[in-house]
Amino acid sequence: MVVKRLSASPSPVSMWPTRSALPGSNDASAISVMDRSDPPSSTQWLVNPQLDVASCVPEEGTGAYDQLHRYGVGPLQQKRIPREYFKMPAEDRDARIWELRRELGDRLTILGHHYQREEVIQFADFQGDSYGLSLRAATQTSAEYTLFCGVHFMAESADILGGENQHVILPNLEAGCSMADMAKPEDVEAAWKTLQGLGIEGIIPITYMNSAATLKAFCGRNGGIVCTSSNAPRVYDWAFERGERVFFFPDEHLGRNTAVRKDIPLDQMVVWDPFQPLGGNTAEELRNARVILWKGYCSVHARFSVEQIEKARADYPDVQVVVHPECRMEVVQAADMDGSTEFIIDVIRAAPAGTTWAVGTEINLVRRLQMQMPDKHIFCLDPIICPCSTMYRIHPAYMLWTLEHLVRGEIVNEITVDPIIAGEARIALDRMLSVP
Image 1 (cartoon, rainbow, N blue to C red):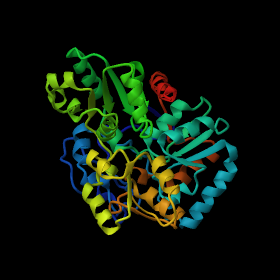
Image 2: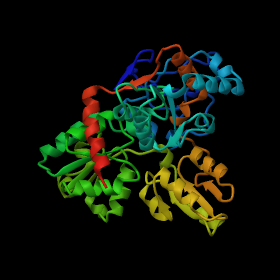
Image 3: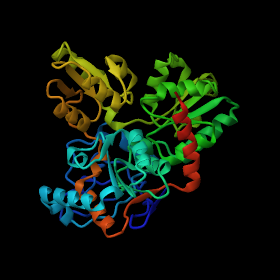
Image 4: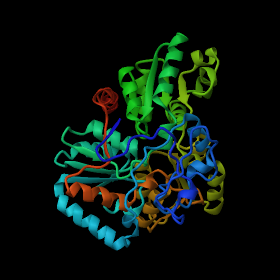
């Protein structure tokens, strides 16, 4: 991946901001940097230090900080933008964004992921999940600029699928994905070589859409494929038609839930921990496995629990529970149904008025469903308001900053993927598109 022009270069140290750098300090643009050798602290936040804090950061309660610290990874460092953007009254800021949008006209497409807050989603030409929005970016061939209000891997996919004349822009470079960061390309390559060294054949690599372009490229050149949360079962079928085993990354829960749906026994699944010899397994266990799952997860969906479902059923005996397949297996099995964000939206929209729904996914989507369907009782399983903290980094202030540069003919925060990586990744994406 290459970030061009006025954007910053990747930082050599982990750039997780701390509470000490949040607004209210003497220097609101300051940022505390944790070196890789420092132990993780409970005060770390994944929100941008120039923004108001989120009410909850899921990485704090799910152990993600420890894992990310071991990897020594963090988001790209975003250039600090003038504080005046954050001091503007919201109505003035929004009016200016609408004005710039009109000025740019058909040259601009704004994409908004379902997990974005309303302050951002109001400007989106299209809403959707990560894959749907990437396809939207590719089909908007008349748009010179795509402002992708999502996270980094989504912007990469949009660049891979888009045309040469299109420029994909991420308003805030620090909008990454902690789950995607849990699978580093060099560690996946090392695991692949280890498996080959054991003489284990017939392995088909599958990477979740929520991964870096380099991992999609790895799958492309090794006979593998990309999947989404909605087509993962069909992708498993594709893989097992071509091999005996699946190597699934970076989300172990989606991989396990999909395997269970395909009637693969749990004793034929193993988890690969990149910090353990043989991933924490014996050679015999790896040879007997049909599914090798990478040790990674989504911090938002890891917060949901069986206890939350039990409480929802106790409070509302007629409740229907729907969760995302990134949740742990026991949560998915305790729910009435599971599916992608688009599935969750569609199933609740199709439900009769007066029905009650407990939802296990990101809070901004749940709130939007509540607003759009007031004739139904819809609530989040997690009683603590815990938004996706990396999506939280996209803010109208950054949108305004990028748009003002665009109208001056300057491109900031452009996301481009190396042509070789893009070509290999496109192979894996095209294989996914070929799956019925």
